[in-house]
Length: 232
Image (cartoon, rainbow, N blue to C red):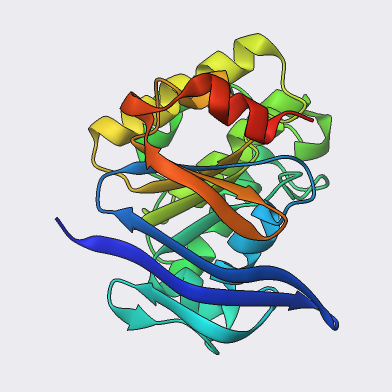
């Protein structure tokens, strides 16, 4: 099985402050990997590092055996990495359809929005002409994920997809992730909500203070131990 993402001894900085300290992490093709941890330990910075949004002076980020260190963000997106940031970052003054069309810009605007997007997120089809800013938080999260999917990424990065979302929408997002898994998508999720990932992820990593402090298969996870490591 191919290793889609292989991060080795990665360091990341904000200004002069080191945030990530020699991080090692792998994601296999077709797997869902979850990075768990408390707020402020470096999880979101890790995803930003993969996308080239923070300074990474040392280490390696191999994506499909291609080195991404020092490559610009647009290169990484065009290589096939889809990114849904924490907070979603949809465009509030643009319609749902226009937000989705932006996802095609990764491929220079080529292609069309697959009907599968509306099968995964039927609520979006009903709201194509509605402005993104008029959607609920959960609907915006669905739109952000759909926007990342329209370009058919080889690796999908999800940063806290359950944050601030009502339980019914969390269930919908979990259903979508399981469907994507069946279709062979490779996904890396940053999450705090352990119960959400137990039936979704294949492997897990736990981060604390910029270090990986635990990792393994979700199927053999010591849940009480992991809860103690991520408890606020």
